[in-house]
Image 1 (cartoon, rainbow over the protein chains, first blue to last red):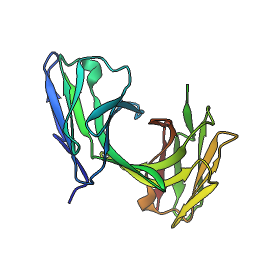
Image 2: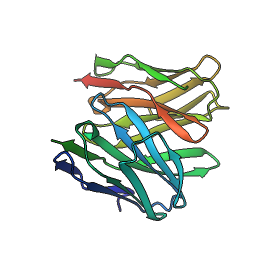
Image 3: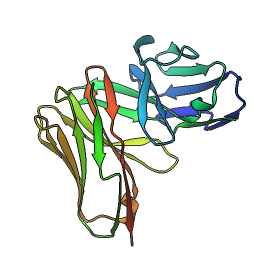
Length: 114
Length: 110
């Protein structure tokens, strides 16, 4: 009954490799996000999708390519991994209501590039 | 460009104290402000959401206030408990995205 889930939880890989992180939400939300949290714990948005359409792309290198096969899934593929890509990547989803918009976060994927 | 700052960066207090965490933002044109909690190795949990037209929100021992004109929000935690130990993040919504603060790492010791 997990609301927002991510796989894998941990990912250790070599520089230059290509890897994917998957995210699924079972909340029926229209909007999904990818965030990056760096070593200083600063959390910054990378991408946002609404009903499978890209809404936000925050000057992220084009080695990062999100894909939303349907409203409940938002995957993140990273090509040619670099040391600086090491971080925790969080997926989130949200829905607007009369009370505003609350984002629900997944548990994070801890990526370490060696 | 919106910038969100949180003070203090870290706080360590004995159990039972009342706490105030501060959040400031540079652009007052926000839709709402949200306070989150992040436990070590975990994702974020939303605590309180304040719309731009509201002054405060309360949930249990938590009370968040918003002064949009001065670009400030505070999170008040009453009668703190060891289970409150976590990092607290505030985030403001500008048009289409959340912009997060730097976080306050709170430790409540017995």
